[in-house]
Amino acid sequence: MRFSILPAFILLLPLAEIAGFVVVGRAIGLWLTLALVMLGFVLGVVLLRRQGIGILRRMSSEGRNGVMPGSELLQPAMNVIASLLLIVPGFITDVIAILILIPPVRDFVWRWVAKRFVTVNAMSGFSASSQPDFRDGNRNSKVVDLDDEDYHREPDRNSPWSGKHLGD
Image 1 (cartoon, rainbow, N blue to C red):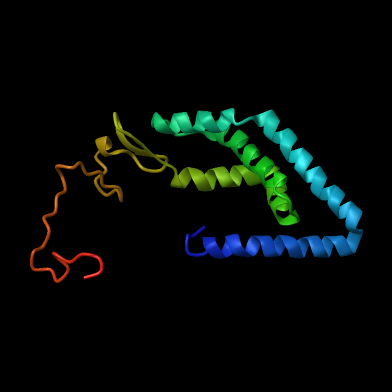
Image 2: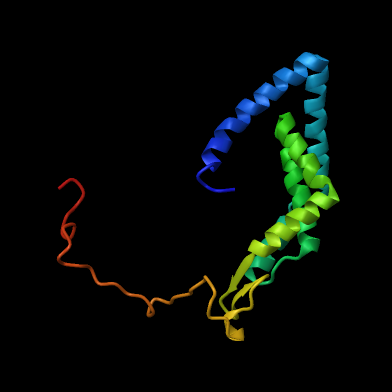
């Protein structure tokens, strides 16, 4: 998702959820709608307790160590995301959570994420799932790692903004 549409998505999702409540409430009634919302919440809490936050900690530590988390870590992490979406009240987030729980959808998401997953390790350099690292001779990579000594820029004294302070 592009960051330019992310604010619009965040603003429109609650409105869409409210519209979903109205539509479902008219179709099945108030009490069944509230029961579905509570059922989704309870199911989300049960799934979250079953998976636990430990899987997210494990993914984070493997990412810090430069190891690309495999499918065996992403599957439980996606279950945690689905459980969090179930906890959020609303039918749209519940449908997204149910889709995430379907194995073929998870496999599709894993293939999409694996192409874009990049890890950087200070000890061994750059590695990516679809590209060899710099040690293999790939100099056409889009990633450039610069140290402080590699890049230094002196201020331009001829610039119209040099010497200016905020409010001048």
